[in-house]
Amino acid sequence: MRTRSIVLRLAALSAVCAAALWFWLGSSVQDLRVVVLDVGQGDAILIRTPGNNDILIDGGPDGRVVERLSANLPGWDKTLELVVLTHPDLDHVGGLPEVAQSYTIERVLETEVRSPGVADTAWERELAQQHAQRLLARAGTALALDRVKLEVLWPQSEKDLETKQRNDTSVVVRLTYGETSWLLTGDISSAVEERLVQSGTLTDVDVLKVPHHGSISSSSQEFLEAVKPEVAVISVGKRNKFGHPHPVVVRRLKQRGANVLRTDEIGDVVCQSNGQDIQCNP
Image (cartoon, rainbow, N blue to C red; front, side):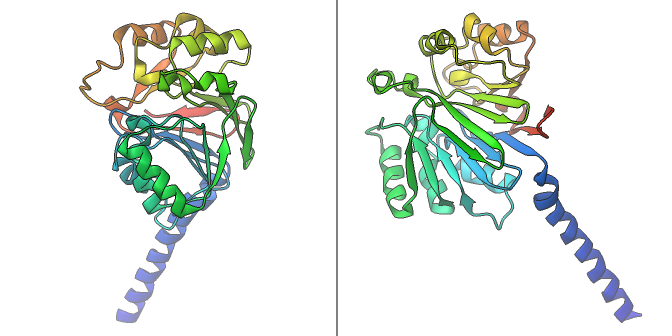
């Protein structure tokens, strides 16, 4: 009887392991998963493609991003196929040095803009150890992983990087999978939004990562009219000193009919797409 009990327990354990493996390998084969990670007052977005390639856009202000990556990736997956740094302000680059210490990074998409800050210097030092391929972000640059397409919309030229406002040098990416799409905007202001509207490159999107944590300096009426998001995700810290998100911005988004989801209220915001439809929590 004891032998039979052991066999049954082993069978049950095998079933659990198989179910877990199916979750990470099987269920994700058909779906794209985009997670706006709860990293406090900053940005960090994890994209897991149908073929289990991992893309990280920004790293938040500190090492909390590693904790959130561990919670959203299987323990055996220690490779990030692509890291996108929108711009080197602390709330976007601060956690990337610890990410580089914890994960192998294959490629980095970035601009030439650098910061004299400690975090950006540490990121450069860690990248030198990684030997990652470094790609220059310009409008028209496109990358594809498992039928998931990333297209850079901003900056449009080197001249766009000459501004003293680092927020306005943010890499803006449109993510497309099948008939579903996201617009990931860094910290651009309404001045860049206006340039994007005028360029004619903006299209309707299902999900908008709201620019600059919901600051009043972004999310203009004209911009929101151009992208018409069904879901608007605000990456923001609880009781932050900047007053983000601004009530006016939240009102504009809701008036446009967008479902507003905030990391300070619900934690990680998870959206999953089968190429036809998107479901976001909650």
